[in-house]
Image (cartoon, rainbow, N blue to C red; front, top):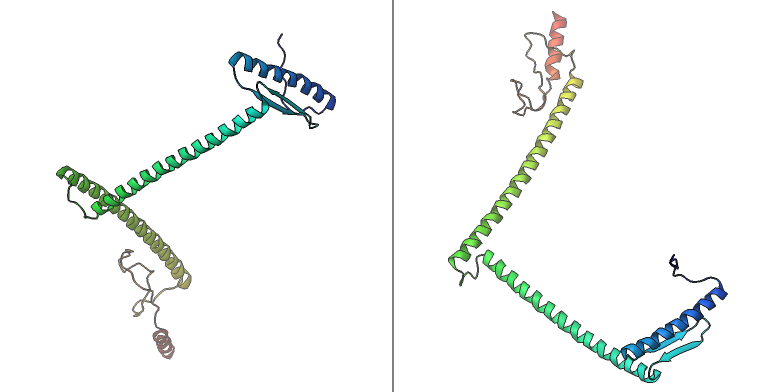
Length: 220
């Protein structure tokens, strides 16, 4: 059976940690030597233990390896900086061209700078404008329909409120004797035919007329 996988995490026990450090340090230095010999590579290895002790290995000279590392690092940073600058220059040129194209399209849509356009280009521009106008009309009609529905809803609520108000004011006991010239108010939004299409404002009968009629009946 093969060996089980070891969890890579800090070893809490100091003795076990020191033993593991010693074994793996020796193995790492051995691998560095093999890499330098087999592949003819310049290898520099620096290890600091947890107690601050230094261990190092260099296939040639540690000083020359570090100097070579610093030189290559500076060159790579310079190359990366130049590459990044060229990249942003290309991006800026691309965005500048896009902005110019947008300005030209806007002027053409506004009917300006149409010279140089062929009949096919003018037809395409006309079709584009027609599609835009169609979309604007559809949006306008939708907004108007929504407003009409909202007004109808509010009118229906007002009509229901007026019906309730009439019931509260007059009720079922409110009657008018035959022959009397009295006005019976209709609910808001109703005319004499009973259709809620013509708006009729609520009106109340005159109290002076009712007082006169009551006095005349008492005299008789």
